[in-house]
Image (cartoon, rainbow, N blue to C red; front, side, top):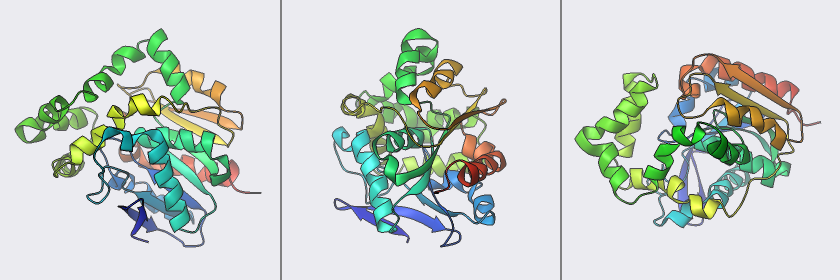
Length: 280
């Protein structure tokens, strides 16, 4: 399966590994795409797991609806459900990083019957995040979120000078030049950055659909080197999971965990699938 469709939109998806292996859905964040998992999937396939890594809404040329309401969390979660349906899967293990992690949290809360296990990289539970913004330095760390909700200005700022600001954002986090070039080049496609920013601009709509308690086996992976996400929300996340839960802290790894700690990610996900989330 190289693509799937939902509501007139066509999504690219990398479906690889043993066809009869435990299925693992890999959800990327901003401003990445499914390539963010390229260094993780070989080890997952070697462990006998099947991986499905879509380019999410806004990151495919044929899946860039206009209007920020199209990027609310209910819609992005609906895309993952459509992926599972297209793959003829009743459920799967769901792994998400950054915005993909928020989708994963919502999947675990809203559709636990479709989620065998949940792994959230970097991003804490949304309710823990909301509280931390008011009670810790998380508000300062998340200051860019308000900027990204403005019209026009973020596109001009991030893409000026051949994407200089966006390149600095990624390079400062430790990503290698080839990956930086890949992500920036994709964001320079017509409408790509505006669509990717639609996830931020849809926050007023997404906030109307709170993510509640998660009731599936959950692994949360956070790094002390993450400049965008602090410890307060990470440590509070357990309160919002009513199921087996584990927090794994990586030392010194920047925000881009799938690219910069792929071996550890693969090791953690494989163990979680085998011991925490395998169906009875």
